[in-house]
Image (cartoon, rainbow, N blue to C red; front, side, top):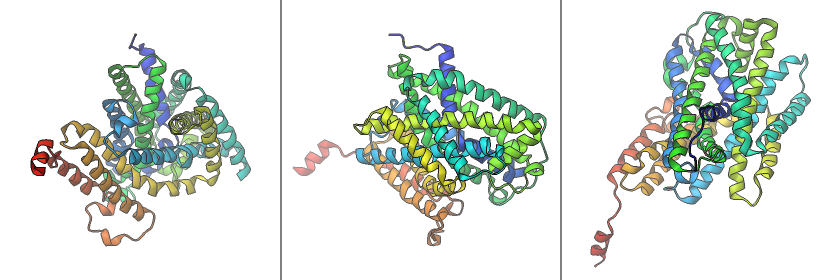
Amino acid sequence: MNQTLKLTDIIAVGFMLFAFFLGAGNIIFPPLAGQLAGENLLPAMTGFLVTAVGLPLVTIIAIAVAGGSWQHLTKDMPKRAATLMAILIFIIIGPAFAAPRTGLVAYEMAVKPFFVDAVQSHLTIFSIMFFIVAMFFAWSQGKLIDVIGKFLTPVLFVGLMVLAGAVFLDPQGEMIAAQGEYLTHPLQKGFLEGYNTMDTFGSLMFGVLIVDALRQKGITEQKPTAKYLISAACIAAAGLAFVYVSLFYLGATSAAVASGADNGGVVLSLYVQSLFGPYGQIVLSIIVLLACLTTAIGLISACSDYFSSLTPLSYKTWVVINGVACATVANVGLSQLIALSVPVLFALYPVAIALVVLTFLRNKLPNPPAAYRVVILVSLLFALIDAAKVAGVDVSALSMLPLFDIGMGWLLPTAVAMVSMFFIGRAEPQALNQEAA
């Protein structure tokens, strides 16, 4: 059987993955981060790129190395723990946070500005329509590459190219002094800000979705699947880096036109209107609608694919369930949704990072099952402390932990646990028999 893809199909797969990633969080967080970073733009942006581009790319590669599925990636974890972790991640990137956020951001940035007096019913009607369209495109998994990779994403990318070109050719102001934590430790703050994109979680699931899409194109063997998966990840990473750099620079030069904005969506909206005049909002609306829609399609499809494998319900039934849930949660409101998601991200992101690192170290570990159990557990326990802190719980008694003050108290204990696992070998059966005798 032919196990090769045409160049146009490879690019389409990469574009599809890029479109899955580029959604609400990718658009609303970089502009505000850039504005707050100001003259410390470079270190802040570098930290952000590590978690928002580097980690998703490495995660996709880890999935390819492991064998192309969540089961391969977590084969050394207890089965129930691996399933529970997958369910939690799918709930976060699906109906609980990330997917509803696409509808909310699409409404706030692409539709709401056209209403003089926007009311709650406008959001309700829009969210229903938005997720009906997303369900329609997610309905047939086999056509995702053709619909998203060859049609929707190229249009989206052209819009982003126009915006980025205008930002660099005609910046709307000068960089100002850094503010808040971007003044004292911009690199670490940028790193943590990258959590908000949720793209490392997305990678764990989108990688599997890409494998399914490749199978629809006739790629079934492990080696070519890994090759094309990594190719798609590199294309998506390059696209994301391009978008983030331009949005960070947009934010850094936005103080004159968007001073005092409380979120990146406002920064972006005011900046684009300043750049393009009365037509600016139309340009922005097209970009945001396409970006949010493609991500919503990917999230609903990935969640439905996984939940259908755990239950008797079919993929299409889960598409409807997830779509209805997303439309319902979207009516909570953007600020409330972001506030609820942050502690959850602080709790689970370190676990995902630890899992990815273990995948690359697995062949060198003397006892992989023990290593996975210990390292994952340590990362979770210390991440829960960081999560409690951002949720407002008083955990000052643990402030002696290294990097605790910047929300990364999990890092050193996890690294120590990982290193220690190189010195814990598997018990030899022969030695055990001798002891028993």
